[in-house]
Length: 447
Image (cartoon, rainbow, N blue to C red; front, side, top):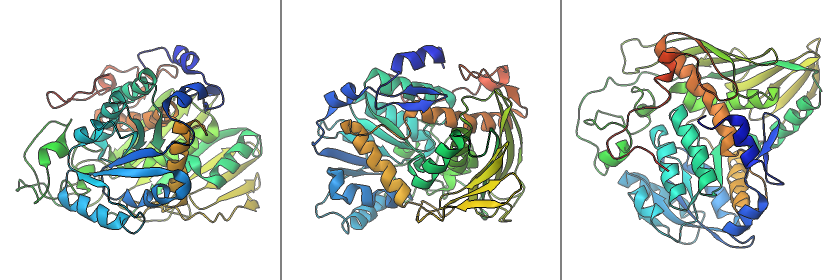
């Protein structure tokens, strides 16, 4: 980061609202939260981006104890706004305003906070716009499109004294919190390795062809910060993930974010010291998918710790016993963690405990949602009021997000590289060329 990380940690070291980052407690002091909103005040919320994550917000917004009012449903696609209004009508007894333009929502002084569920290229720019506009932000994963945006996002939250939570909802999972604490307390001895994985059976996607934008879509606003171009078929509805690097962050940004975060959390690791990647497009070679669909990444950390990522987007072979999860290895045992449970093993591989969690959080299904998401969003609301510390403060989230960016960069430049585990900077000139990105004129994020 541009500021020495140790100095940054000292500057934002917190009291009761802090979160652990590499052994240090950071966050916004409770007194700062208290200046923002009274503990019993209602929060006015807007959701920006009404796609597949929408179902994650019904419950936390509708619950009486959340004490929030949904003022806006905002999306660049008219049909998305109308569908979202219809779906929310089953959970709330009032009608939020429907809006096309995030900037109009941010300019409304009545809005206290936004939930940013836009495509990846909008996550950091839209969140920074909201923070500088006086809003607290819940930003879905990936919280940034590149390392520079991560840096700016943390600095924005600090500069404007706003609460910023990353949407890696497993940080609010009861059974995950329980077993991670036990790992930190030594239940498997010294943890030294984690293997994070994701398996899906995604099919072919169309080859991009120029076409008129769909009715009701504001294509220029969809592109926003990304370099603008003509519309191509089926781009706006999810396939932007795979159509180059202007919008998406690959499957690592789409899903590895979650499991890599659990792995790093369990190992109490900060930035890695090195990344190496083997990745390629292995399936449907002639379709429109423009990046890897299979990746093996290895991250090395100080203290002889290692995290490995096994991502298979389009091969459904069940290697590890579940579509996604994380395995933690220690000197005296191992733990398997996914969204529904954890299983604790001794060094001989015998099951010691199976949590059999009652969690209903979705796994590899598109969009997802469930009790973890509900708890995580409500934790954000309570963080604004100063009633709880954030479970995924943005300063913590960006370190896990860095692993996503490092692996994507290694794939794009065709080689691994060493990393400064204090600043997060990469010791490779080719890699550092991808620290940031090109923006459409007038859209570059600024504080």
